Length: 229
Image (cartoon, rainbow, N blue to C red; front, top):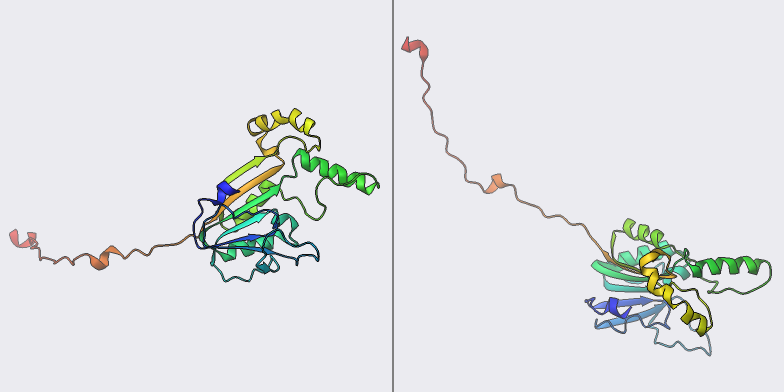
């Protein structure tokens, strides 16, 4: 995240959700804000200062007013992720960027979460990941971005080893992170996207006939063959 936002320039940057992650700490814009969609609970103060509490499907910003929007797992917890992404497109300036983090359903982590849901219906076990969110596939998200006029600049996967809680087993599966990017790149547990908002414009070209000098016509004599005879 730090490497992605460090070289994005402008004036206004916004992070939506997940105050535990400071996604804008490496960015150098003069105005950087954090917004959440829920008030902090009593006795649990936020780890960072929240300057705005609002519904992510209706952002209180005018169109084309932000240069950067960071969505760390925000779409997964949104009530309507497509509308949230459409709002992000509205408030971004042309050539503005959005940075998105998400969890991949076609991964070992996604498989474990689906299996945990099945066991939970049977009354046993517990979930591996939070229950409040919903997985959004990588290619599905790319289709949404393309429909909204975004162009994906960076798309990467990571976290190929299984999610185990024992450090010994984590070290044992370390080779999967090294081999995953080469042999099964689309099956990483997490994905990361940077997309830029493209606005197709046009340039009016003045027709050449308006500026070209008028040609003076000269009379041409025509021979009369009948008189020659």
